[in-house]
Image (spheres, rainbow over the protein chains, first blue to last red):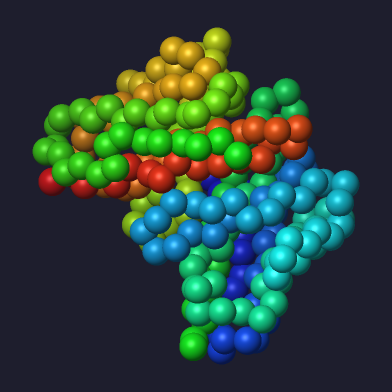
Amino acid sequence: SQQGEEDPQALSIQEGENATMNCSYKTSINNLQWYRQNSGRGLVHLILIRSNEREKHSGRLRVTLDTSKKSSSLLITASRAADTASYFCATAVGGGGFKTIFGAGTRLFVKA
Amino acid sequence: SAVISQKPSRDICQRGTSLTIQCQVDSQVTMMFWYRQQPGQSLTLIATANQGSEATYESGFVIDKFPISRPNLTFSTLTVSNMSPEDSSIYLCSVAQGAHYEQYFGPGTRLTVT
């Protein structure tokens, strides 16, 4: 079963605009990871944020984590047509064991 | 990050047959996972395959249908048994690495069952 829900399900923006995607989850987590998947291709790991972190940056990406609200957001600044893809959040759960559960994903379309 | 390869990259199979998917990692990893991604959907965890222990299956997945082998720290196989068209999906292997268990994925195996 999926742990998280993402919204919006789909997002269409103009090149140069910022894109914000949100992820909510249900249980306590060890970390949260964001991935990108271009159509029909493999997953690219974007960023990992630990449960004790609140914000993390990587290039044009900014991720926030609010464990009290069980939510995270991914901001892509100055979007490009090449950012067109599906974006997934994935939460790592488990104490002694470990597994990562994926959200439903957001389809981002950046118009040139 | 680990480099992960999968074989085959795609296959078209007849219903009732079985397909074994191989996953090879370029470094030793303890934690390995198998996921399924049905068309237009997100990823669903099938099982966790840690070396030295039996695979742990998620709800809705059983060993008879998806037997997994994990003979060493760099290799695993997933078999999709007695296939039906509903098994048509992308199957991905994944490993967790590093102090914070960053998870990386193979390119996937696209399976079509006719």
